[in-house]
Amino acid sequence: MSSDGEPERGPGGGRWSRRRFVGTFTAAAAVTAIPAPVAPTGSASGEAAPAAPSGPPRPAPDSAAPPARSAGPRPLFIGTYTSVEGGGRGIGLATYDASTGRISGTGTVTGVGDPSYLAVHPDGRTLYAVNERPDGGVTAVRLAGNRVLGTRGTGGSGPCHLSVHPGGRWLLSANYGSGSVAVHPIGASGALGERTDLVTHSRPAPGPGQEGPHAHQVLTSPDGGHVLAVDLGTDTVYTYRLDESAGTLTEVSRARTRPGAGPRHLTFHPGGRFAYLANEVDNTVTVCAYEPATGRLTPGDPQPTGTGAGTSYPAQILVTSDGSYAYLANRGHDSLTRYAVEKDGARLRLLGTVPVGGDFPRQIAFSPDQRLLFAANQKSGTVSVFRVDRASGELRPAGEPFASPVAVCAMPL
Image 1 (cartoon, rainbow, N blue to C red):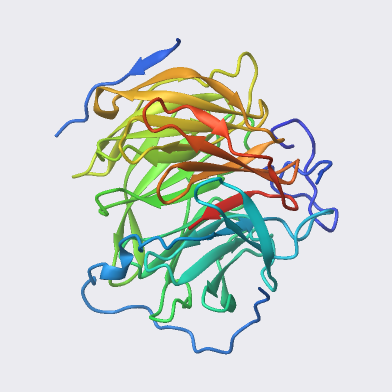
Image 2: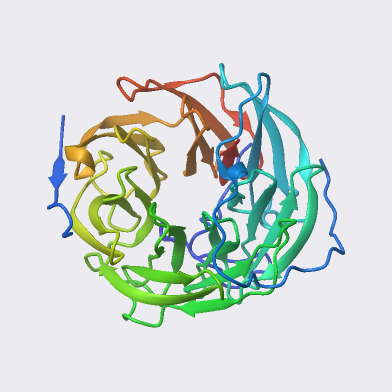
């Protein structure tokens, strides 16, 4: 069953993960505090696969710093489902005006199936996409020429999230359907090597209403010392250490939410001592303390999303780089919640919600300068853009939403 109570079916009519929410597609307040923590068209490539990196970890290259922003249109990549009715043909290509937020479509990178989530390498040269299918994969695309470098299997089903380790040598992905996390090496060209590890969340037992683990996100802590995996099915956030020579994960701790919370997405405060967890099933957000030395995450009390009674399927939460405001996408409520971040990250204060201007905002992202916020609206097939007021945190629509088939991820560069 899907989160909205509807049975999920895959492209061939078989059972599919509840994440898709496949349906009819068309083109002063609460405060929670917790204690501070204890001390155009691509094609497949015949390029040779990289071997797993060896030797001591390399520092991130200078090119990992944000590149200088040239004047003129900026690139925007849009993830979609290619195997559903009305879906896209691959990764959508577009540009946006950094001043006005206006989006213009420029084409598609084909040959990438169900690219529902996207990430870019720290050096800005390679794009990575999950292939959210029963036989899951991850695909690398060289941005110069938008050339597909190849696909590697994730060892699980329905991968829904991926991220690049800050050193640029490892790709991390979360298999929703099978509740596992995969690691792939990244070669000098940006191409992916064979998987070096696969960790399945076999414990604890699934939460209320869940039939098994559902890994929904995997990310690296701000200090770079730990990898955290958010699992909706087990109501748990797992912390791992990544061996940067071998590309393997070792679990070091677990953080349990309250039963039935359904944690979906985690984001860190820039100070690195707190993080914010969006809980899909019980319609809450939780402030968590984080201990960089041990990787231990300690959830505080859940707090409301400002969307009223019932569930609104919170999707993704973001925090500004100065640590002043946080934003949450609410799919059922079709809104964005704004929070003030207080006490050096230890508290969120609910300020209110704003209509997203679309249906089912699945994912949100800032432009690199954080003057714009993009929302990918799955059911309306649109990308909404908002201007971000840095002083007040207020969001103001920047023109009309951009039409894009089954838009589930928008990644501005």
